[in-house]
Structure formats: C-alpha cells, structure tokens
Image (cartoon, rainbow, N blue to C red; front, top):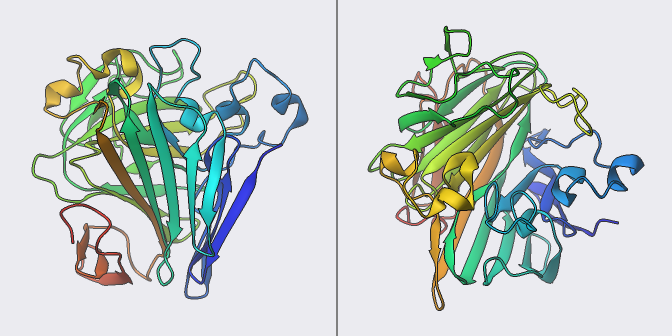
Length: 360
C-alpha cells in the first residue's frame, strides 16, 4: 500500500506518495480555474502490475513528479533506475497545511537526502527543495515532472546553447529524432527520416519514444520551460536555477512502448526534466567527460563529507489569457513572477523572493 500525505492552501492541493517518493496529484488554483498539470499512468493501481516484482517500484507507481538521484542508472546494479529517491520510502518529519518535510530512509552513495514541499499561499506555485548532505562520488540528479496533453501544445523555454540526443534511441525503431545529433535550434533538429523536427510543437511524432537534452545558455540567471496546452487552455511552467540544474531533458512518450505495463497506452506525455546529469548515461559518465559536459556544464554533483547541495525547483500553472499564442519570457523581480507573451502582455504572480539563488 502507498502512504499518501496531503497538503493544501487556497492556491493548491498536493498528494505525496511516501512509499516511492512521487507526487501523484497536484491541483493548482487560479481564479475560478483548478489545473492538474501532472500525468498519472493508467496502470498505477492495477493489481497485476502492483504485484509484479519484475517491475521496479518507480515504474509500478509511475506518476506526477519525482526526484532522481542518480538520474538514469546507478553504478550499483542493485539500485533501480532513477535511484532510491524514486523507488523507496520517505519518512514524514513535519507537516502543516501548506508544507511537508520528509527524509529518505535509504542513503544515496552515503548521502542523506531530505525533501521539502511547499504550496504557495497566494499563487498557483509548488516550491520543491532537496538537500543532499555528505556522501561520495559524483551524483547526477534531476526532477522528473511528467505533463499530459489531451491535444496539441506549444513549448517555450529560456535560451539554450545546444540540443543533444543520446548515442542510442530509447526504443529502436520507435523514434522520430536522429541519434546522436546536435543542434542549436529547437525548431530544426535532425529527424530519423532525414527531415527536421520542430521540438516546440507537440506532439513531435506518433507512436514514438524520444529523448533530448537542452543545455542552458551561458550566463542564464533563471532557467524556465513553459507549455501552452491547447485543449486544456492553460500555461504550465517549470523554473530552476541553471547554475545548479544546467540541463533540461525532454522525454516524449507517445505510445512507443508496446510491452507491459506500457502496452501502447502511454500517450501524449512529455517529461520536462531539469537536472545536472549526462543525459541517459547516468552515474557511469557523470564524473568524466561526456557529450553534455563537453558543452561546458556540470553533469553531476560532487559529494563529500561535510558538503551540502541544495536543489530547488518550481512548478506552476495558470489559465491561458485570451489571445495568447506564445510565451516570450518568464522573469522574477523582488516579490513578483512575470509571464509575458510576444505582444508584451503580462501575467503577474506573487513570488517567494528568497527561493532561487541570485534572484532575491
């Protein structure tokens, strides 16, 4: 059985599954609208899937957002994909109406990991913080929020230096992107069939599984990603400190896996995974040169006794204002977060000015 804990404010409701460390429910409220941006897999509560020990706890309970440490694979073959942070129990330390504090019951490479989740009292925002203390080695990490589009969507993001696909596709024969490839233009990425693919218009393909890493541009102060979901008529966005999480990895999952428990039914899902990681190569390449680090960014956190790493991340959602077709910028100044479209129109939200380094 899962251990579900809930928090709520006037601006949102959240459920956290402490048995595996994910957020299966996030409702963000803005005016009269309640938006649920995160995806939940159709097999999450199917008895035959939950009883199958060959499927990892993460995959059995796959939903929402979770923190990966390590991201992708571990050097230890006994550690499930995306680490114990997404496959094992967290203990609740404290909780009130809008916040909770938890600690992972297992260590990760000798490190202690704690989690803080906080819903804003007056804006449709979820603030997440992970503290990693001690340990050894180089640890790749990432958030893993998954968003569902019932129809089409438009993707917008802070300036990127490079767009990279890994050496090998996720599912051979089920990709619409070329592997490996590098681009500096999100709208022109080499495709598997020789044409180019526009990564800003979703879905990017049909019955496909694809993965791409976006490297933040040098000097970026706020890293952001935003999706206008057409059918849902809303804007969903993620914010990060690019000095801590210098890459954003996009996982396009649109029915390209035919085996259990996926069975071709995982449709219209995109992960926007802000991290410090060498893409899919995991812990094995995090501490050595790799195609992502060759772009001039870190691909793992250096752990050591007495060393602390703080990773902070924000998920938000607002109704799409009438007439908006693009997002030109997301910025923060003092106590205000501003979303701007190409015509200069603005949505302004109350902002916790102390949350992301360099922005207070």
